[in-house]
Amino acid sequence: MDTQTFEIQLADKTYTIEPQENGTFRVLNEEDKIGVVYPEVDEFGTTWKTMDELETDFVSQIGELISEHSLS
Image (cartoon, rainbow, N blue to C red; front, side):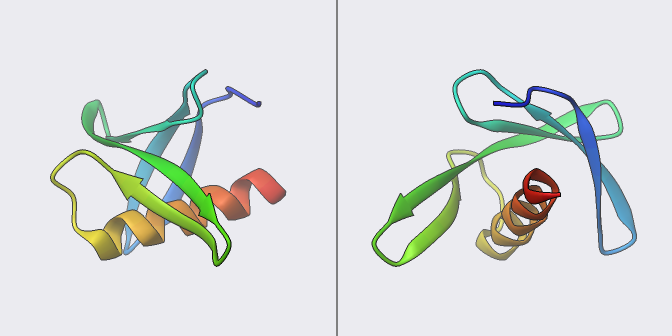
């Protein structure tokens, strides 16, 4: 797994994504960690989840952008 830090853009904000060895992704807004997201794969595809207090839509959007980055 690529553990290179990268940036994504969502709603005019730039977030830093730090892939972790365990398959999760730390999401930072500037220097502040706002949460950790991770993909959960089932027969219907991939769903992005978090154990932090983040909006479900936000987690899904961040996850989609992480997926797109990983494929590029």
